[in-house]
Length: 347
Image 1 (spheres, rainbow, N blue to C red):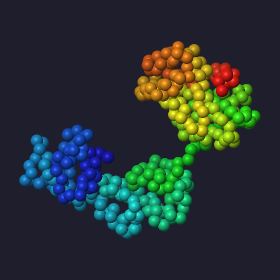
Image 2: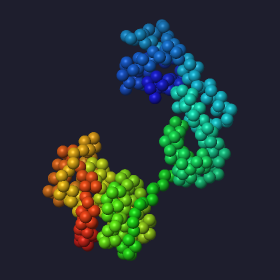
Image 3: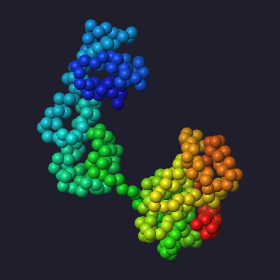
Image 4: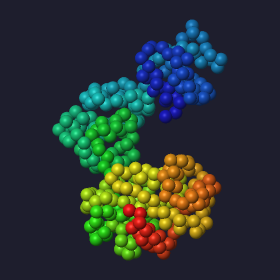
């Protein structure tokens, strides 16, 4: 939304017949004066605002008080209100976004607005209060993917609707994992989580040799949302589950580790041997734009020796990093065996 549209939308919500320049400048204090001046001049030119001459002007000629011409302020208003009345659209829907934008926005969205209004008025009360996003998308639009698209999310945003407003409970994505059944028989189950796809596929052929209950593909940040499903998905919810995590060594990777460490259903530990293997290689330059996070650093460094901590911190401060792909299949297998052999003394 450009400056003129922002001011136009603000004025459409303004309840009085006139507006003072001081009120507008306070409302748009973050906008630089030149941008504000150009937007106001455009509204004055097209007649959306008319000056109240008796109140004078500022140093650039903007009137200190303006009278609102609502018909010009939102040329689309009449057409929108006619559609609302003709179709009997749900009173609970908020159409204020469309009053501040060209009529084409309304025309493009109207078909979906009609479907949503129909559902709210006639069907919502008869269906379960909370369902998945795909199920609700089918219920309303007869398209199970619409709400998952950018177009669907934009529509909800324009109508000021949240997922809760339409009874959607976002479900976790199923974990992608390989399972070792015999390692799921005990009271404690150890799992190895790899952030990226490449190391997962490198280690998968040797997975049975390592003796972990499962090998889990973390898929970046996705693991932060679905790790809690591990006990159920592994088929042994009563056991104590320990997930050993290995991801990229950069600020983003540390933040992911810190996030998964808070999982209430699984105990999460750092797969330290994999990270120590990084130190045998030269760290490439990159990731300069990532934002440091001291809480994430503390969660990571807790698992390392002081000298290792010093080396890793220096790498971050020099804007260097280690991607998981830096380790070969042989490196990963060696680290996996070292980790598994040491677990007996760590439990």
